[in-house]
Image 1 (cartoon, rainbow, N blue to C red):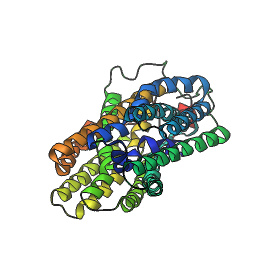
Image 2: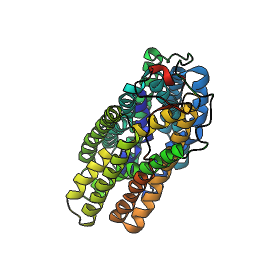
Image 3: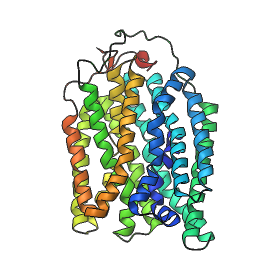
Image 4: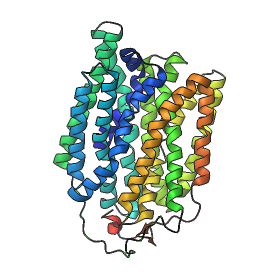
Amino acid sequence: MAAQAASCVFLYGLPYLLPELRNAYHLSLGAVSLLVSCPLLGVVLTLIAWGAAADRFGERIVISSGLVIAAAVLTGAAFTRSTVAAGVALACAGAGGASVNAASGRLVMGWFGPRERGLAMGARQTAQPLGTMIAAVLLPAVASAAGSGAGSGAGSSAGGVAAAMGTCAGLCFLTAVAVGLFTSDPPRKESTAPRASGANPYRGSTMLWRIHAASTLLVVPQFVTTGFALEYLVTQRGWTIIAAGRVLAGANFAGALTRVAAGIWSDRVHSRLGPMRHLAMAITVVVGLTTIGAATRSAFSDVALLAAVAVSVSTNGLAFTAVAERAGVSWAGRALGVQNTAQNIAAAATQPVCAELIGVAGYPASFGITAIFPLVAALAIPRRTDAPTVGGSAIPVGATPTALESG
């Protein structure tokens, strides 16, 4: 969780530096949104390679080495004044941070059984909102303090951005050391549970493809609300950067709690997809309410947007668990790679596209279009029973905890 949260501070928390980045590099909203999406490009390009490395060398070494790479590159990014160089550095940092995405889910699936896997994966998935919560509190404050010491204008913004990048690098390095010292790889013994002989779970069924599609659609409201919440509150609602960052930190903490609650819910009802469908509808409602508030220019939009930030992250752990359980031992790693890649492509594309849409049509229209995505996702989620499977064979929720150890 700590490793994932540290990587998420720079993977998903850079939008909280939008005002400083715009001033430091003299960028439009669309251009700076492209810049903060560069880490996700690095994630997309290297997830499969990190997954293969985890298969061969183990999770601990993969996570630690990736975070060390990210820390080194972010340190370099702190000293560049070139927009292109900053973008390349952030993409390389994302490539290092992808190691955590590729390996940490395997740790959860290896150590926890079906009765507790929803809670465990939900706890692991809290790292993303916790990381963005840390970013919301820490990065604007660090950038503001460093910028104040450097004077005013673009030079002060550059100093603030450098300090924030250095902070991200420090978090990655500290957690890399902690993972190396305290994390244990799960046993890789053969499962005693019944399983098929590696049958391709994608053949003869659209189940996994529909889960991938739904979870990818649900990325859009998540990254629109978290990515533009601070910019909206500051530029449209008159909040200060520090105040907006603190309130959004609380919303992200609430988002972490929703992921844990969703995991517990799925364990108790023996279903991942049913809760995921209900939560997709809830996201549709809160983003729709945000649209109404933004259109009427009322303070109601502030409350609705904060609720959307919290609720929009709730489904991610359910989707990951459902994919791994459906794919089974022989295919879980590859299926999670597909899941991660599709989601990160959507995440990387969402912010630049939405920034252009905001520039053309404004925030109300952008939020309104965003609300369509979780509605379509709710319709795409399969309705048939979703008991876990191992290699294509259904297993009961109370089955042996080692059923997915090697996946």
